[in-house]
Length: 396
Ligand code: PLP
View 1 (cartoon, rainbow, N blue to C red):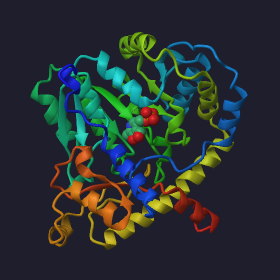
View 2 (cartoon, rainbow, N blue to C red; view 1 turned 90 degrees about the horizontal axis):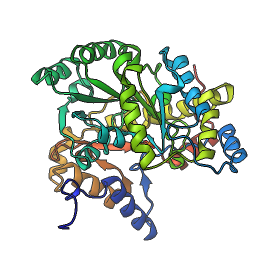
View 3 (spheres, rainbow, N blue to C red; view 1 turned 60 degrees about the vertical axis):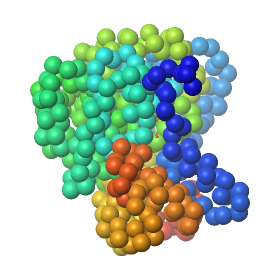
């Protein structure tokens, strides 16, 4: 690999994919596998959105680099409606997945990336690929793995002149937790004090099923980029459509990203952009679809949370998205007696011995010896069975 760029040397294919490959292999051998590894929405794409995609299958031309105007306007209107923040079409950038937009952001921005752990698996490898400095911020189980404002303050104070992007992801992958209103306000206050850019990854925002999702952009509108897309709430990960919504003051960053976009992905698939307009416009059908999704997730999340607590794991009650991040630390001795002393071995043995596919906490930036796992409660069949048996209690 002598001709590989130094930044990508040593990078491996993500663990998510390896676990998936091993699960598929076991399945082929006739084993029953419970797929709690890959974080993919279990729900079908809402029918009106599918209809719109079909109706626009003939749209074949390259699209404007920043995205279709009607879509950018729909996304801006969505943020005005949902978060009460003033955004227009000119503040929005559309891309083939928010992951791609995050990558381009890291490419064009000059400064450090602050990542609280545990966090989504791709932030750090992206930073490494483009040679960006990462500042890890550990969080604690005692705070349900949330970034505390004092901790953010401490990091920013170290060298307050350094330009920084701080990533916040809520509801969180991998923990299923989110921030309270007071915490968002306090974090926003620190961010404003040090003029950091917040990348607010709200891809699971619509799947907040205990209480209302609130964007930190409401409290720090001038420095927050909201990241979103169709992948989770519309169950359309494979369609590849992500959105970044910028404050007016960061237009220079949007412009720079659009230049890179024009030389790389060119534009997002045209039919999918037309379909996305329908999704962001909202309306009754979308609301019904989302209420149903949230109800099922709330039920499944609560069920698994209780079961995990019953076996002795430390785990906080999920509030949104479809993940849980249990710590099996209290079972350390029992597990050690079976040769399990770290999250990777725990994950491998669970898969081999019980057929349950999960991901090890180390992939989310936690120390390897910690006995944490991420569970995605997106077993399609399980959810379908529950719905068919009408075991999902009505919303109250
Ligand atoms: N952010 C988080 C926290 C995620 O879990 C994911 C997908 O797994 C993404 C971003 C990327 O989503 P997409 O690129 O499909 O928009």
